[in-house]
Length: 108
Image (cartoon, rainbow, N blue to C red):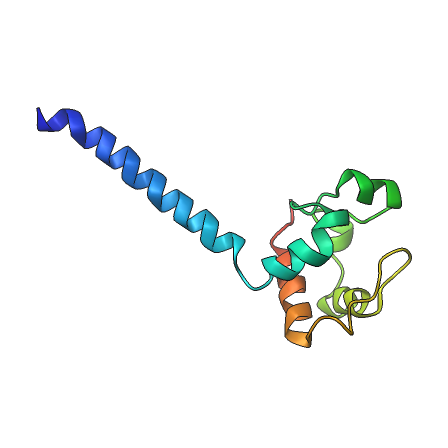
């Protein structure tokens, strides 16, 4: 009779572990500024929201963005570009570094 419950227990434990890892990832330091400052236009996955695509927001998963240097990405985040606002006054330098690092995780 115990063998019937083992697969269910394993499945339940796996579900808990997976949900914990997702919630931890969603609360990393770079996700918080990303979700509040970037996701509205660039989308939660970096590929662009409908509004962002209409405004010409870059797809962070694209080779074009991923080939930019960290300095270029930091400069754009700090000073803005085209329709993108500058965040240099509202974000700390460490937040900007975290955003660049997070953008790097979004490549295809």
